[in-house]
Image 1 (cartoon, rainbow, N blue to C red):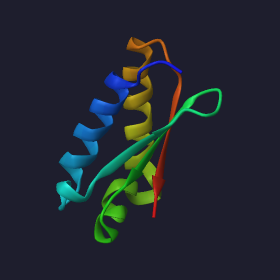
Image 2: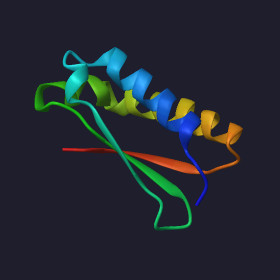
Image 3: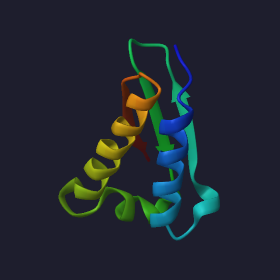
Length: 82
């Protein structure tokens, strides 16, 4: 699978800007399937901020990261893990 540098850096920037504890943000890449999956882990108190009301913030983050992945000619999914 190709490099997810653009998508990863955009995702990191967005999530770290939203949360109260940016040092606790971890992003792992799982590219074992047909598309790369970026798995985001945040501090327990910050998960609500990242998801947002009715998942609107999470969906907006996914949209922007997918657009950034187009630059690398990739398809990515973003998952927020507890």
